[in-house]
Length: 296
Image 1 (cartoon, helix red, strand yellow):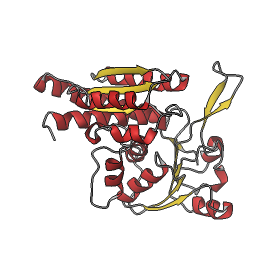
Image 2 (tube, rainbow, N blue to C red):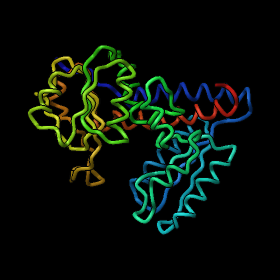
Image 3 (spheres, rainbow, N blue to C red):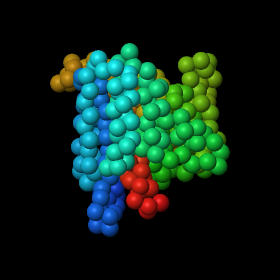
Image 4 (spheres, one colour):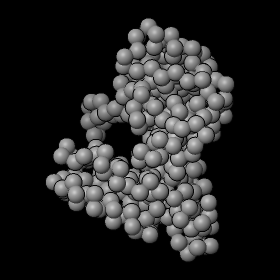
């Protein structure tokens, strides 16, 4: 068996094409387009790269893109004021704050300041809480977890009735992707750093769907994977690589070459979940825009 590669880059492009078509139709009807604001504090090269990719994707889909670059030493109250300013801007329908923030900034307070109806990253407590409440629906879904579900569905993977194992329990990926899998009627187990190794290996080996989101390069061995399983690798850890121009490469949590001989579906790193995260961010912003113009 050789796995079908789940091409997140291709799937993300399909989603972006769908978004662009919808934006064009809505613009023709309302003479208005979605607006996405990204706040970046300081000059971290990785954060600047991520924000640049988000702005490029937004503009390609016909969005208005607000680039908010702030100094590293900005005061807490000034950053909160900038978020509130965007909350009040009628042309802005999605707000993201690029993380991490400088150590002197209270990250939770900043995220809590975002209007839940413009919380394009779905990190506000209201959206997080509604996600985890049975029968409730958040205003937005967290981008990376929603991207994982979309990858599975668009690849033809059946989720309902399947056994899924999520490696990692972070608020950004592990916990919300487990909840989304349960909402799709999978039976879900979360394993993490405190799970005994023998138990972890046993659980992964029993899973029809494996979501690896631990941030530990090459942790999941190919021999652990159940034959015919679907494996989505969320890990994107920089590791030194002198053969690369940047001096590093992004490594996933799964031993790709081994896993592809057992899995039925397998996402690569890079080119897997990363592009999907941006596509789902745009989808959330479009959702906020549609609510604003009365289309939902």
